Amino acid sequence: MTSSMNVRIPGQKRLVIVGATGMVGGYALRYALDQPAVGGVTVIGRRNLGVSHPKLKEVLHQDFADCSALAEALSNQDAAVFCLGTYTGVVTDVELRKITVDYTIEFARVLRANSPRATFSFLSGSGADQTGRSRMAFARYKGEAEKALLAEGFPRVYLFRAAYIYPVEPRKEPNFSYRLLRGIYPVLQVLFPNQVIRADDLARAMVDVVVRETNKRHGPIFENRDIRAMVNLL
Image (cartoon, rainbow, N blue to C red):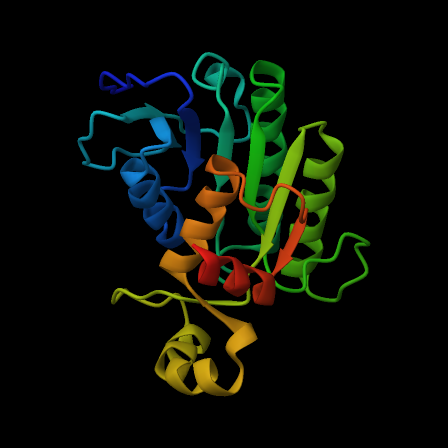
C-alpha cells in the first residue's frame, strides 16, 4: 500500500475508484483529483499508477474475488466509482462473468459493510438486461451486476449504460470492431450522437453525480443519451 497525506477539509467527499488503470477510470481519477469538493481519493487496483498527488492513496489488491482485506480501505468512504471491466472476446465467457458480475458484487459487499452510506457509481453498458433474457452475454452479465447493486442496500446507486466509448487518446484497440468504430467516430457523432460518448465526458459524469449529487433525483439508470445530457450541464 502506498499513501499520501490524504487530508481533507470538512464537507469534502472521500471517493474510492476501482479500475483507474483503465480508460474511463483513468479519466475519473484525474477529474476527481481536480475537484475542490473531493478531499481524498483511494484507488484500488493490481498495480501502482505511478501518480503522486496529495489527495491520492493507492491500495494494491490482487484478488477481486475476495475483497475482505479491503475493509479498512473502504471504511468511511462517501462514494465509489466502479470502472473495472473487460471486453467481450478478450477473455473467456467464464472470466467475463467473473470480472463483470462476481468482482462487482464482492467489492460492493465489502464497501456496503464498511461505508453503509456510500453512493455507488457503476460503469455498465448499453443494452444491459436485468431480466437475464438477452442473447448477448455482456448484456446479461452487466444486467446481473446492476440488479445485485440495486439490491445491496446503498442509499443511491447510479448505473451508467454507455454505448460506444470513444477513447479520446490513442491506444491499442482490443479488436477490429473497436478499430473500426474509432475510425468512423466522427460520422457516428453526427448521425448517431446518442450512441457514442467520449471517455473523458463519461468519467466526469460518473464522478460528478456522486460528488456534487447533480442528479440525485434522477436515475438510477442513465442511458447514453442521459449521460450526454448530463455532460452538457457540467
